[in-house]
Length: 111
Image (tube, rainbow, N blue to C red; front, side):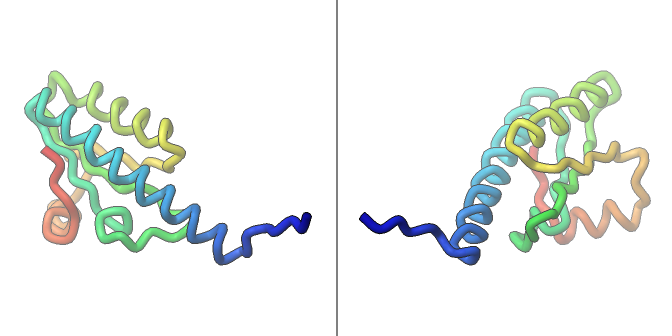
């Protein structure tokens, strides 16, 4: 019996599919949390546009009421790590108006 191994291209494609599925799952989890707490996440960058590379991170702006902000940040980070994704989570207050405008225009609002 001959053993066959996936090519590098096949392994990369499989990893990309896994990452895409992880991002979709993350979007669902963040949306549910945002609805429950009355806030929103803004997913932007390559994860929002579907152009993630092998070492891309997940850019997320957290826009929640003060009483839920810390919990929302921790939730977003934890949900990324659970899925093997590298989070770059930022509170809205730490972002420039230009960054927020660009993220809203090119990204996905999860609420």
